[in-house]
Image 1 (cartoon, rainbow, N blue to C red):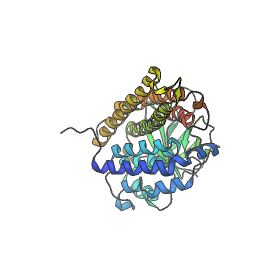
Image 2: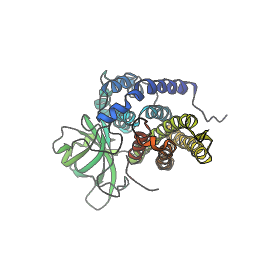
Image 3: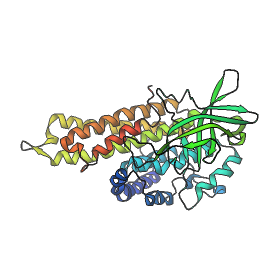
Amino acid sequence: MISFGPTEEQEVVRDTLRGFADEAIRPQAREAEEASSLPQDVLDTVWELGLTSTQLPESCGGGGEERSPLTNALILEELAYGDAALAVAAVSPGTFAFPVLDQGTEEQKEKYLPQFCTSAFHAASLAVVEPGPAFDPASLRTTAEPKGPDFVLSGAKSFVPLGDRASHFLVLAREGNGNGSSRSGAFIVPRDAEGLTVSETELNLGMRALPTHTVSFERVEVPGGDRLGGEAGCDVARILSYGRVGIAAALVGLSRAVMEYTIPYAKDRHAFDEAIAQKQAIAFMLSDMAIETDAMRWMVWKAASQLESGADATRAAHLAKSYAAKQAMKIADNGIQVLGGHGFIREHPVEMWYRHARTLSVLEGTVAL
């Protein structure tokens, strides 16, 4: 039988995270945004839920549960429903740990994964985006030049989450072999590596509670043993697909937040003795929000299910992320339109969600399909 819904276990996980988002994340979102500061208690509580550690092997101190990209997509939607900035911060350690789990050597797993099974929140980040126009993850400007068995890393990465506190970065770079050909790889770099510098916190349009930084590499030497996958290297496209599914899932949660805030408002707000939800133009906006949020969610689930089955999810993940980025912006913009003048003031969260949508949609650059 074909099923298009979560399993019973996934329903339990989703309901738990939905309650957590309502009770612990949403009430702190505005204050965190205004202060441009992450509430440590939220990070600690999310860490205690074991969203990362439970999916790591028991040999590393983890829970040993089978990793499920689909369950993770459900979790990220719920966290982002509470607040997109805090959601990205909460899952950022997984963007480092899970590629190591999936594609790292046994030595890399033994060395790095136990750090994510401790009682205290452990920050690490995936570094993908590069400063400058026309960024394309398929044509990286950051380079990893072979030097004997090791590599020399040169370039810069921007929009790196938790760069101010991350112990390690998983850096995507173009490997050059000196004869004009190259391929992409991923490299584990500690923050105290010689030649690595982390900028001051970037000033972004939205998601201000999430500290992002530019990380620069001035001929940083990386041991060959810290090339993800060792001599065999890794599948960078798969790492990117996981990231795209995550961004799309967060955009679904954000879009649902806009929709579920806007519809009751439109029913309560009256103009000319009639609820504005009864106005045709407004009703069409609200119905489009519901249609597109569901469509985005189906695309996320499709891509996540392909990742879960081990299939090539490159196209599905790219489509999900591209479509979600476009539609989430439309939904957030329509949310402001429905609220009218109230859409622009901080009394209502829709203006914040609009800025979040714009920021989240370009976390991996502005690549057109």
